[in-house]
Length: 53
Image (tube, rainbow, N blue to C red; front, side):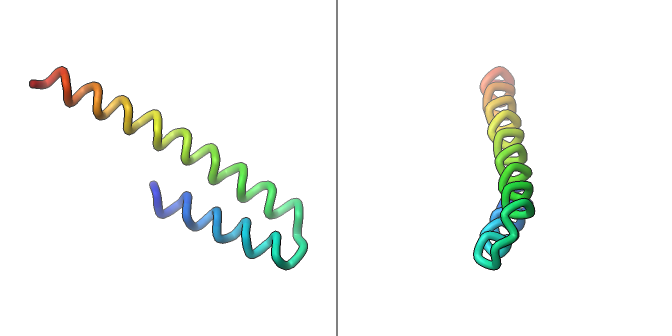
């Protein structure tokens, strides 16, 4: 999942450098959404690991 975040951030940076504002905004938004999903899944995983012990 981290790989997807990095890929979309690179797409956003390259698009911003070449002046494609809409594509850069879209890629940055997608990367941000995936990042938040990753954080939520990480917290759920850590909490479930605590209850297993």
